[in-house]
Image 1 (spheres, rainbow, N blue to C red):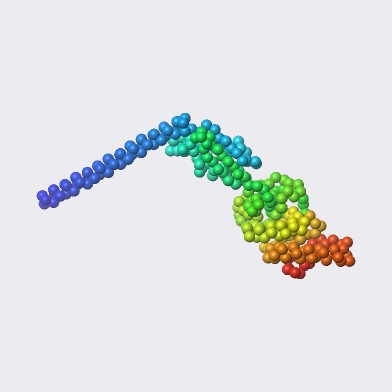
Image 2 (cartoon, rainbow, N blue to C red):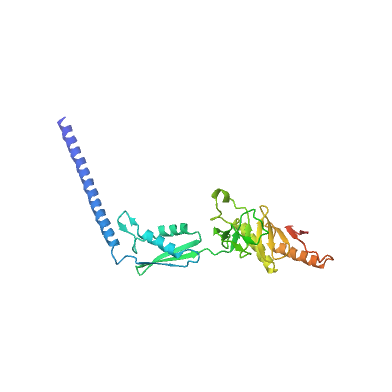
Length: 280
């Protein structure tokens, strides 16, 4: 029994020594970490590293002063309540761009960098308007656009549009999946990319024949009506080849011009059925 007691005592002492060693190591790590934290905090306030100005470039519709104010707000924040972010090391290179995207939907890209360790440069790249989306059921007979949204050349909708008179951009009336659930079309596309590209191929072919499209209305999944600068409405399906469709249109227009009723102008031409062209 005495031998068992000595073994138990030695085991307890060894366990206590291990606990003491672990505690000593933890204390050293804690002290070193605290020292590093204090040094980093102290250095973050040194004038040598501090940012003294914010320059904003590339803004057109975006308010550059709002961008500057937001940047200064983020620079004034602290890391762990103590480390200053207003310097070339800890400036908010990730958080600030995220906040700027939320500030204005016209912003497409944000580039930020530090110049000479003193100047925070913020370059804003905005979306360029190339199209309008005006809902699904709006009246295509009107020549003014209100309650519409701006879209870029790829059909990506990024912001609400001002009221336009006339047709500054091709105006789309399409059904966008997810628009009603989301409550806004911003962040969505006018049409699926492949479908949108087919529409623009058709518009480009018409343009080659001096026919300019001002409005595009979706009437079915793949069916569209085009309002052009001509006196007739054009109906077309994206399942048809644009080059062949425009070729058929040329033949129809030539046939109408040669007919005995050449003084009669059609009100619509239907190109949705291949070589069978209907007009009235």
